[in-house]
Image (tube, rainbow, N blue to C red):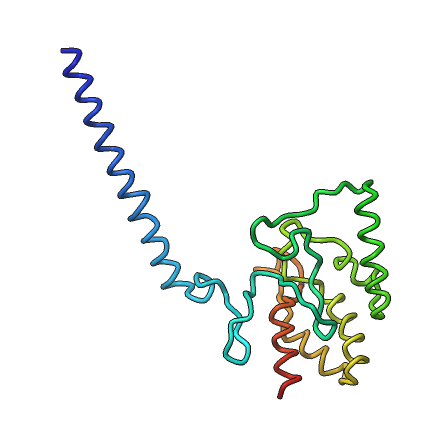
Length: 192
């Protein structure tokens, strides 16, 4: 009788195992993927940004730029790599963090960007991949780009306003500018 019960329990366990594999490993992922593709195809495919026919990034991620002719992202402790992403985890009392912030502050001031207005450019975000900056910081950088390229500040500010994202439902989050989208708009304007 005992061995019959044991074999019955094994049979139930094996059936449950295979049903779980099929349900959780196949049906659930396929249904969630199908739902995402039908309801949010742009987001489900990575929110890819295209410029002149080439994919140049994602709206969801900051990226390393090697030019002073674009709007700047927040710094990244992971050098803008998605694996591993994250913060530097340096404490506020860390000498290394202080040195890093002073260097970033000097670099911004050299460009003519007020580091107090753009304080987010001194510290990385928690993920190191956040593509957003404040509207004030974007407008401060617009002063710099306007001077550098002899470009009308009013047009750059309109570009910033066009790329400003607002709090979700008016209460969740703050006004912010997606630097990836802003840089694409800026490039398109420069290459017209």
